[in-house]
Image 1 (cartoon, one colour):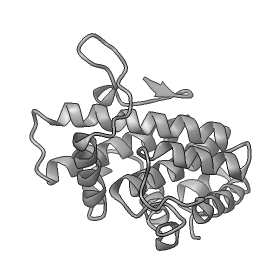
Image 2: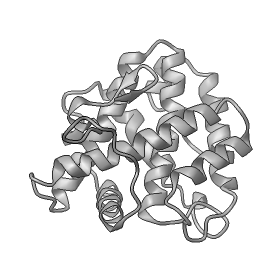
Image 3: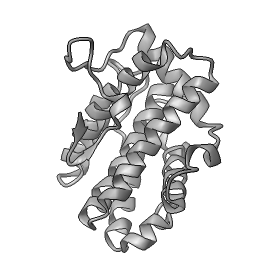
Length: 212
């Protein structure tokens, strides 16, 4: 499983016992999972996550998470300030980085960035008390959410702000509370994308271009 030509880590692939693809679920288990991910992301231990990755990917991922947590993105008439909303915002900013890295031929860095996301999720699930037995199921759920959101955002980014707003909304659970037109999220994404387009790969991997 994967998106574009950057693959999802094999341990997180979204397949069931007979290899069927799992689709995003909006049941209580999914909500519990997303809550654990987003709560733990706020207190992630960066050094542990990236001990075997390029330091530049570490800096980039930290910048992505910080940008995705800007308060202006959330609230009434914006992205719901819920665990699901926060996770979708991280995926949106991941999409911006992956798109530009692939354009610049930095496929290895894009791959490491995706792996960093899944490593972050798994580590935070363990920190939040999820058992070893339950981890694989939870990771299948997060891949389903990630692939669904990433595919929609990758298609929408080159199109128009309205297409991107629709992709963000489609990535959220059914009938998200207080969902607005996503204006702040779309404006921030468009602004970051324009800045990234002017930067070389070295600058992007140094986490330039992410300050709102």
